[in-house]
Image 1 (cartoon, one colour):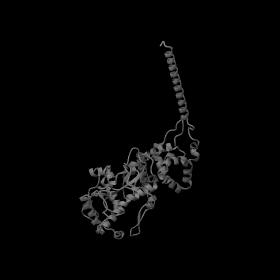
Image 2 (cartoon, rainbow, N blue to C red):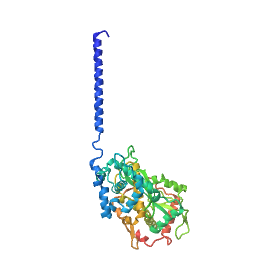
Image 3 (spheres, rainbow, N blue to C red):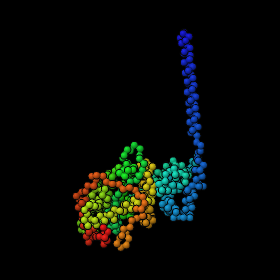
Length: 428
């Protein structure tokens, strides 16, 4: 270190190091200041959102519709004011929040009305934020919250699967009375509900129609009410796959559903098990009846298919009513599968509530028979969009020997004096 040149180089190095430290400190201070400036909001609440009570849809338009045009209110909310009031009374307490020192909580009626309008129209959150004057990120939180509240409040009352023989027989009696098909425990079918591709899901949700979807599998009674649903199946799966993996099939096979024992068909003396009716996607079993293959059918087989289709199209009508009333099901839903499941379940419960409280409101949407000849008239739902059918995969349409025997027995019954109806020959 006695060398002057070495001492000079050392001093220069120390000075450079000090300069670098100073430059780094200045840079960190500048970055910190920029972050602080960036984090400061321009508005705590945007002025146009703050004028929600003066110009928002809930406090202005809905009040006008309720007072001046209840038919328009019913069209906008997809339900009459009385049903909206019932929902608000029962669901309101669970979606009510406390006011804070920063802002007042959203009115529970506003939350419910906004959610119902989203279910009815399928409008995206950003578009809804302007009319309702609520930020889109707030809407994305409150809609699942309200749907969950509806499910928790009404599920046990409005979507209860029968568990006793008498309850199943009551459903069977309805099918026989309305649709002339015996021993039917319900009509089973599946539909695709379009959604965006979930992250890291590959092609699991990609269906045969060429879009991503979750599957709604449903069992419907003779009055178009859903009595059991399985929501969330991946779009690539078929009806048979989802049903075979479902809790319903497991309960049917282990006897925990409380199904009635086999007994004779009307005006007959041979015991026949009670069964579901479905389309060709399902495997033929004693507890699942489906149509005969269309190729090479005989006259008696055609009559059987017609009689079965009268019972089976109940589930098609239920899907049609559901999707035309709650048109969010006809859009490509942008939520994740868990939220899609919440929304679809809430729609089904509201559908059942409507069928229970106001059954006449949806009758124009249904397929119906007119005149004494029971002429078939397609329902209004068939003229609009509807959810896509699911289909079977190769190898899933296997038929059991016992199922074939039972189907042939019912075929002979519907073609005999014991089970025939006067108009069936002219309908095929």
